Structures are given as structure tokens and as C-alpha cells.
Amino acid sequence: MEIRIIDLTEDQLVDESISKELKNAIHKRFARNELSIVFLNRKGYSPVIYCRNCGKVTKCPKCSIPLVYHSDTSEIKCHYCNYTEKYSGVCSCKSNRLTFFGLGTEKIVSILNNFFPEANILKLDRDTVRNYQIKQKVISEILSNKYDIIVGTQFILQFKEIFVNEKKFRKLTFVGFVDIDTGLYLPHYRSAEHTFELAYNLSEFIYPDGELLIQTHNPKHYIFRYIKTLDWKKFYNRELKYRKELFYPPYSNLVSVIIEGTKKENVINEISSYSKFITELNENLFLIGPIQHKQKKIRKKYYEQFMLKIPVERTYEITRKLANYIPVYKTFISYSFE
Image (cartoon, rainbow, N blue to C red; front, side, top):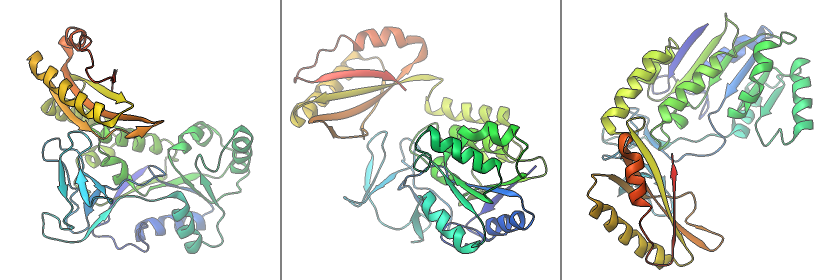
């Protein structure tokens, strides 16, 4: 199997998300009556900023986590340490060719329909396969060779056994990974790990004489060195080095601290009180935040979230001390390990 990395800063796009190489590869398989998968990392939109000129992603200077754009305030923010700056629209390389990650399956299907009007294209995601009956119908259609191209999200991994083990349908000789950058630059310390695992899983769908083609704006990212050879041992060794430098798990335990209350001012005041408590413990803890919780307000309750990096060998001792904290402002505090 061949693995190719397409540099989107050099390869001319035939559409806003499809490179010439990707289009040609699909056309080649369609002409040979072989099956292709066009894969998107996720359905949604991740407003992480990258530069089309130099391929750089805008990252937090404190956490090395990609900054996320907030259109309501025109700010870019770190969802780990809350570092914030105004969005200037200009990269550090002085280019203003900045854009955002984010594609949807419907958009890709529409593009491919224009390119290949005679092809039967299946959109395979949770929106399409809503229940067991529909899932069985889709499986039957795939096995009967109804489709030429399948556009899918991570939901497609549920069908892996069929693609790998069933030999009743045409050869699956091509997988095009359209938006690997979307997952690679999610604001999470495990983003590279999850992305490598995903690429590895997708490679197992493909016939030995097939091809995995990956589009990226940053081909110099260290992950591609290991994806090209599917060398998971060397990748994880590299990843562990990065984790050790920044004191991420497995070299620490990452504890999520959520403060909730019915009054916003109580939650804000509790943050101050809790921060003081952590400082006074004098345990050299790494307190990150407050970071952005999934929802600031749910069912008339307000939420704020911290992250604590705790040395693995002292986890039990320190969590017992954390449990001694009593909320001051009529709030509730919960802990969970990330």
C-alpha cells in the first residue's frame, strides 16, 4: 500500500477542499470500477487558524495548544490556560493568508457530485444512519456494489469489519483523508495521538495494492514521518518525549475541576477562593485555567472549569487534600480524571 502526503500549500486546489491529486486519484479508481472512501475527521467546525503561506498554526505561547477563534469577540483564545489575544488577521510570517479548519460531509458530497456526476455517492455519518434498520440497509447496499464513492466521518469505523473481511463487493483501493489538520490541531494535548491512530485505522481498510492519500497544510509536522511508514512504536516514543517536556499524562495526572452554581457571581467568587486554596497548599501544582467549559450555562446553572496537573506518584495524597476544600459561595465542586 502506498501512503502519500499532499502539501496543500503547493498543490493547487480544484475546489476549496479538494486537491488535484485527490480528484485524480478518485477518478482513476472510478474508471477501474474500484471503491473509494473520502474521509473527514469530524462533522463539525473547528475554528483553528492556519496560514496558507507558511502552513503555521497559531498556538498558545504557554501551552503549545492551538488557539481557537471566537467570532463574537474577534479574539483567539487557549481553551487550556485562558490565554487570550485579539485576532489580527496576520500571521507571524507577515502574511494575511489566514483561514480556518472546518468542512462538512454534505459540502464534500456536493463537490464530488459536480466532479463525478455519474458516480453513486454515499454519505456515511450519524445523520444518515440514524437507527439499526437504516444501518442494515446501508450495509446491504454497500455489499451489492451500489456505491462508487463513500464520504464518511469517524462513524465509518463502525463498518470496518465489513470493509476488511467481506470480499463480496468491489475492491476498496483508495482512501482520501481530506482534513487531517482539523483533528491534528484540536486544542487538546492528545490530538496527535488520536490523529495517528485514526490514520492507522483507515490504512487497514485498503487493499494491499491501494493508496492512502492525506491532505495537509503542514507536511513538516512530525506525525507524517511516522504515518508514511505506519511506525506506531517510533511515533509513541516521540509523543512520550513531548508529554514529558510539558508534564502531560502519563507523566502527570490531569484532573478536571468543575465549579457550578445557580448564580454566576457565586461561581466567579468561588474561582478566586479555590485558586487561593490551591496556592496555599504549597504543593507545586500546575493549575490551568479557568478554561472554557463545554457550556457556560446549562439548565439555569453556571459552570467554570480548571485543569490540575498532579504528579502521578502523589495523586492519592493530593486528591485527599483537595477533597478537604469546602465551597464558600454556595457552589458545588466536582473532580474527574481526564
